[in-house]
Image 1 (cartoon, one colour):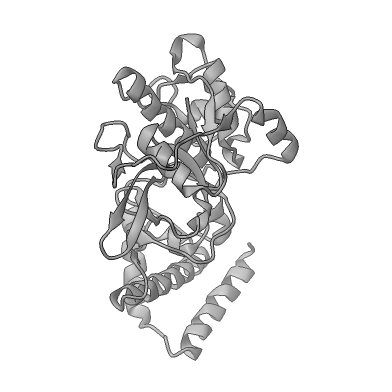
Image 2 (image 1 turned 120 degrees about the vertical axis):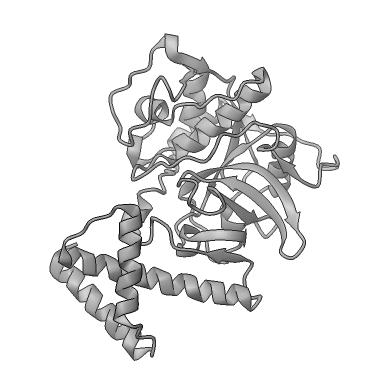
Length: 334
């Protein structure tokens, strides 16, 4: 975006606040902004600084509105500013790197998997959390690379390996970004990763560290430590099947709508959003449970660092009409 356009954005934003009777003291805004960029080590020239400060303030007002609704009992989650607060929507969307396959590719891949079969009458635990079983590594940060699919599938393979061997390893998302039949930092999806793991194996993070850009594949047979035998998929939209798979088989990779600003700044509580139908982000369901006040939820591991959400996790509404498409594109290694 050109600097002239950015200046226009700043002026329009400030005028809108004034017209709405929401003009904030400039001294207070500048202090908050200075504290923010200092804490995160960000540096902008003057024109860029004004543009970023306007974005920051817009997001601050949005989080305040949601938190006020929470205090009034109108929503079930809280929000807070984080390191994404000064990004444009276009910059933020880079992190949502789940790319849906075309139908030709899907037809070819469908032969290598099958839908997960389960008994809908089987009684399942009221709550499951694979973190308490030592099967989940801490949330990590993908940075400005559209590699959510790599982090989510690596985490699923980590849990799968833990169940098979008793060892929890940190696997390499970079191996997945560089070497699978996806689009590197421009996105990807789960199937090529599970198929690659079955054929080649995935390296440990220590042997193939994350750099946040796509590079030439450096895989070698002697560093591959985790393989699978393929994957199962969940029948699209079947939350009971997803619950069953999480309870009986382990963490499941899912595609969700992660582009809403309310999701970007989620902090705590049970996240529920009425208008989130576009699947664009890959995450890992590691459990489920029920909140006394806000009902059923999924425990979801994200890849935006531990400062995002609840230590890197979001609790998403469950049994709420497949909210944010959480059961529409789900799979796990076998």
